[in-house]
Length: 386
Ligand code: FEO
Image 1 (tube, rainbow, N blue to C red):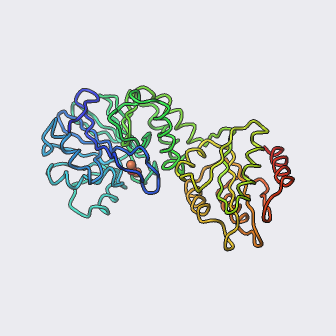
Image 2 (cartoon, rainbow, N blue to C red):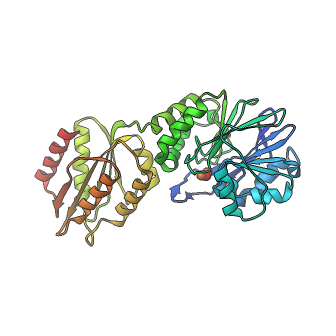
Image 3 (cartoon, helix red, strand yellow):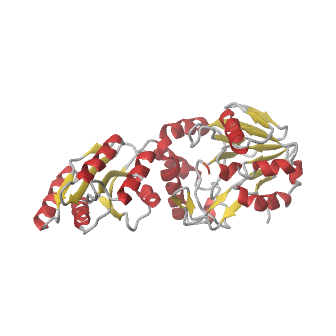
């Protein structure tokens, strides 16, 4: 397999994960790639590696342009093993290579690989002068691990931000302008919603630090390389990290005998009455990581479950656990559901949404089956609240 030159003497040497369909719970219907980049000059510099099982693919791409044993520097922008997983193997070949990482990256690498990696910690803002190339390092703590950093090469005007600006896409195409932008944007949105969303303030800080740099390529560690739609992706990250929402709703529910589902449809009618875009998402048929993509820009998040064994349905419980962890901000929530005798599920949902910082509308709780009059009343009441 060959390296791809993305700028003179800078090569993409990553691995493509065509069959990946689940990345720790995030559904990756389009697979992914782990992007490693090789800069050839006075020093041979590799920026990040690939998952361990794609080591041979990365190695063959490196071998197409240089002897891997001659690599001098391996920059580890992030310890998570989709990027660090091949460092140890590569260091057995590139025996003199120095691994450069943030101080947290150094700690993380030692706790992952236990071996004798030659690691040099770098400070934020520090510049490594390799004569013909300089590398500047910017720590980006919690975007999305404590060790995360970006590397900038001013001579090539390339920013290597690791996970930031990534998308889980396996493809032969390498650049954002080689695929439909709507698709790339959708995957970048899903990536932010499921990986980066909890860290808006840290993203904002990183955008501030990186915003003044002069780059015409953003080379992330997953998916396509940004060279055309850089203003768009930067603007989207700014919008998302500011927790800006649109006037739209997502109604998430599961149902046992369709009563909670009927309430969900009555709520949907309220959005339609106000001509507010809304989506109905039954958890029986919707993947929670796809739901997060819808939720990322939605102001209204309504969640419903009937009561089962004094609690909510397990699908709703799983969804709420995921939602709470990703912590979307500036949202309006509502709990709803049907019940037979206990009715605890609605209060439990309300508690989770409240604890997540949502501004709550009054809950809707219906015993057994809502009739037409009850459903009409729900639609009328909620229409007034939107
Ligand atoms: Fe792509 Fe946080 O690893």
